[in-house]
Length: 447
Image 1 (cartoon, rainbow, N blue to C red):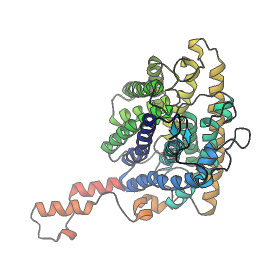
Image 2: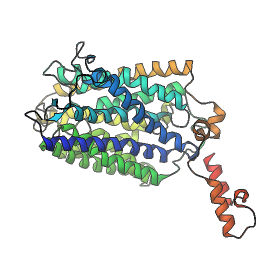
Image 3: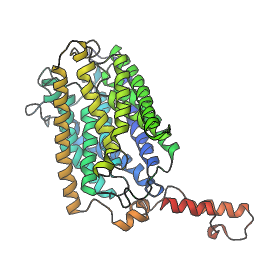
Image 4: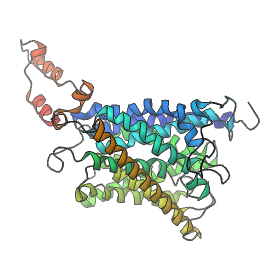
């Protein structure tokens, strides 16, 4: 290996990449538990398919558009590395091989469109969704990743490298980007059948908790790994991630206790995710006390923000807008207040003597990414809806999207009835066993 190579840094980033990959299955379980029984498998596979689609596109052209040398005023990378051409196994990015850096960034590209899926749960055609992922990452994520993450001594992406917008691990490129795209899509597809009328409670809170735990675990790779080295900045990012997540959970639980009179498991899981989202852009620029403040604000504000869909009339099924768009904006903006200038960046926020300058830059970054993502996502959603159709027919939505789109169901209720019949000594064959009242109730709830 050439001079400057670090085996320790390389191992650290490889492990971090694997942790970020785990976040996508974690997201699948988080979302899968939040929907009704009849949509469980569809929700799971909507996340998993992103692993397949984006991984292939990343090698073909995604990496070069995102991290190739700038081709036009910080807006997009060049095409020198189509098909990963010209990238040698021993070529370095800092102290790690370029292939390792590319693998790490790929996992960010994978989970970003998967986050969007929660906004349109229960009502999207799977084929149309896969097509949306392919086009969306090409025209939205890859350019925005170049704007925010590509640094080349002032000649890189126009937001991060040229304008000084701080986004350590993806508050704008990942969370605001996905959250606003989710808003655009749920407006295109319209409300679910029975929105505001029928109960649409999570069918499995244990799955939600499992998913949030996997997300929390993987997020250490997401944030600490973004230091791209096993160093003090990575350690600070790791600590800030843990602290802000814990504070956000407390903030969310306190809000819902005051507002609704109970501490819920769904609130605990959602609060943790809100904290993870908010600290993502800030974990490399704030102190641990700053992380506590960001977490508390994010937990309470995101808990309040999820009710906006009922007031404004848009059906964001799993609160992607309230958690990811709002949480990403909170974390990005609060950098302008809490950046110390002594962690991973030299810029200081208002509370550390930096004035309003950095806050203005952060606000610009939030606004630009939000507008760009919303407009292109809405146009793309409309194009798919008017051509191949994006939303499933109403009868399919009511009966259950799992059977219609995947010819499967998450749970076999008939076998439960058969087992109960055998327990009471029924002579009826297991396949034709009468259903118990609990089984019938479960099927009614699923419908």
